[in-house]
Length: 124
Image (cartoon, rainbow, N blue to C red; front, side, top):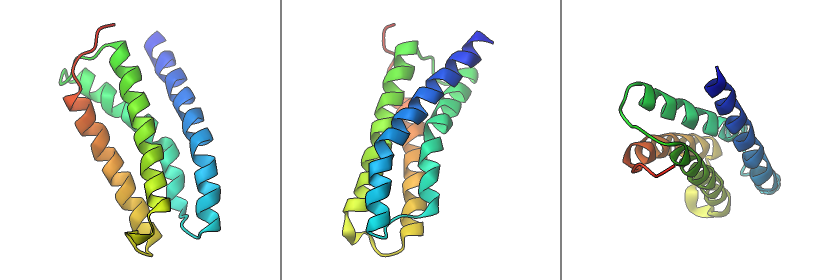
């Protein structure tokens, strides 16, 4: 039960970091008409990442330490912010913002899986 509380705390901190990072980007995207309601799902991606990591550890696919969890989560949060920034600031992605948002979500989801599987064990 203590582990579940710890994961909930980490998820809360990650959500707060994502919100603080994405709010300026959301404001800019709404002004440029590059915002879609699917973009709100980016806030939930760290939770999905922690669920994926927990499933992999439960199935003994990856044996990770606590430092792996923090480092991977930090890299994943950075990838979310950079990915969304690229979606907003690159005008050559087309005019279909809904499709771009869905592609970004799918790409970040697969990034989480591949990054978790390929990350070596870090010392505590």
